[in-house]
Image (cartoon, rainbow, N blue to C red; front, side, top):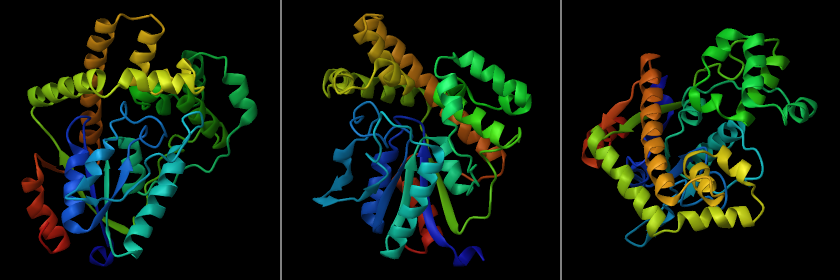
Length: 313
């Protein structure tokens, strides 16, 4: 059965691991197209802080097609269900044109929703609940989730635990499902055959890559100016901070809550912590049975891809 399934390559890894570059090089050699699995790259205007690196999508004058980048307004909510639906549509579109889908990303929840074919809750947004909780703080919302289902609450990861919008969604789904423990995650058999490639580097090298990239984005690419522009275009600092990391700490700097060097130092620390959390997510996924082949570069990936596709990468 597995041999009859359409093949899809997944490239995952931590921030600053070089996922995009590897994905584009593979797409160039294999006749592939990229599907981004990044929860912030879906938003328009958030280019530098999210690391879209759109200039990388061209090799030897050939532009590599990409999907699910710049598909949502940052003022609006883009859900996990939205991503899953559009990712499946992109995969099928790419396959129909005889190309190879290559999913590239670091958002574990997005990747799992597609690879594990989660049956996501179809609970409709509860406008009345959302308005009621708009003024509530995160701890109050989390307490309500815990009261309905303490086991579910204990399994919410730290990133989601600090995300008010996501907690509200969890709460409305739990209420609609009568307190079901896993309203958002019911794995199902997939119609695709996935090759999972994890891009990794030694801790010291990844730390250097993060520092170098942050310096470049702040000093050369205008990341502070990007956040200023988003704010001028009507995106509140409160909303910007919800996107975390670059948008959170630069917003604090622009509000005079942090000095520039302090902002830079804290941001570097938080990005490194985030990379560690991403790796923890992937390792936890492996423990649940998903095979991830860890590689350091394209050469490492070639044999795996050749065996998977039956041709040279």
